Image (cartoon, rainbow, N blue to C red; front, side, top):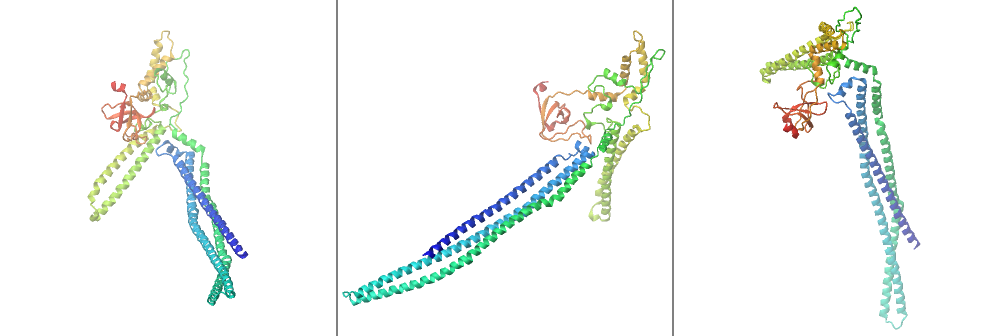
Length: 573
C-alpha cells in the first residue's frame, strides 16, 4: 500500500516537472521572438534613417542651371557638394546594416524558431505519451490486484460455506458436493488472479524502471540540449548584431575622412580670387583730376575734364530718376536673361567671359555636327560598296542639312569672335595709362569744345558778369545726355513704372519662356500648369497676355495657355 502511494506521488511530481519545463521552454521561445522583433525594429530604423539622410543630401544638391550650380566654382561650395556625396554614401552603409540584419539575423531566427517550436512539441509529446503509458500500466496493475483480492475473498467465503455444509448433518450429500466444487472453483479463480496480478506487477515494475531511468531522462536530456542550443543561437545572433555594425565602420570612416578632406580643401584666398574674376568689370580707375586756375588774369573758359566727376553730380540734378544718378555700370538690370545677343549690356570683362563661353558652346556644337557628318559619310561609303545594305542617296539630304548647320554655326562663331575681338581690343592692358572707357565720358570729351563755349556764353549772359558753376554743369550734362542714347536707354529701363494688376489668370498648360542661357522668346515668362498669376496687360489681338509672378518677374504668355479672369472695372474700361 505504501509503495502504491509512493508511486502515485512520483507520478505527480514528474507531471509537475513537465509543466515547469513546458513553461520554461515556452518563455525561451518568447525571448527569441522578442529579440527577433528588436532586431527587426532596428533594421527598420536603419532603413528610415538612410532614407532621410539620402533625401537630405538630395535636397541640398545644387539644382541644374541655378545659382547654386554656378557657385560650385568656389572651393567651399565644392567641399559642401563633396560632403553631400559622402553623406549619401554614409546613408548607403546604414542600408547595408539593415540588409545584413535582415539576412543574417532576422531570417535565420525566424527559420530557427519554426524548427525550435516543432522540436519542443515533439519532446513534450513523447513525454506525455510516456506518462500516459505508465499510468495505463499502473491502472492495469491496480485492476489485477483488486481482482485478485476479490477472488481471494470469494474463495475464503466458498471454503467456509463448504465447511459449514459438510459439518451440517441435515444437508444432503449432493449439496455438500456442490459446495465443495464451488469452493474448488473459487480457489482456482483466486490462483488465476494471483498469477495475473504477479505478471502485471512484474511488467509494471519493468516499465516503471524503464520510464524513470531511461525514457524520462532521455526526454529531459533532449529538452536540455534544445534549450542550450537556443541560448547558444541567441548568443551567436547577438555577436552577429555587433559584427554587422563593425563591418561597415571602415567605409563609414572613409566617408568621414572624405568629409574632413573636403573641409580641408577649402581655400579662402582662391574663392576670393574667383569672386574678383567673376565680377571684374574691366573699367580703369579714373586718372588724376587736373587743377583748373580761375584766379585774376586767368581764362574763365572751362572745358570738360576727362577725369571730372561733376557730370554725374549735375546729371543727377538735371535728370531725376529712380536710379539716383548712378552711372551705367552700376545700374541694376532687372531682366538679366533678356539682354542683347552681344551681351553689350554687361561690363567689358563680364562681356568677354560670356562671349568666350558662347564661342566654346558653339564650337562644341560644330564638333558634334562634324562627328555626325563623318559617321554618315562612312555609312554612305558602306552603302555604295554594298547596295543591298541601303540606298546611298537616302543619306544625302541629311548630309546637306548637316553641312548647312555647320555653316550656320561657323557664321555664328565668326560673329561672336568679332564681338570678342572688339571687347578684347577695348580692354585696357596693365601698361596703358589710366583713362575712362565709359561711353558717357567719351561723349563728353568729343563735345568738350561745345561745352566750353556754352560755359563762356553763360558767363557773358550773367547779370553781374560772374561765372555760375551750376549753369555750366547743367549745360554739360544736357549736351552729354543728348549725345548718349545708350546711356539714356539704360536710365529709361531704370525709370520703368510698374503696371497695375487688372485681374488674375490660371495656367492650363505648361509654357517655356526665355532663359538666361539662350535668350529665346525674349520678353516671355515660363509658367507651369495650374500656376496662378496676375494679369497686368490683356491680349491686344496678337495672342499674348502680359502677366506678373512677383515684383521682379513678369512677361508675356500665350493667351490660349491661360484662363484669364479680369476684374470688373478693368472690363468696363
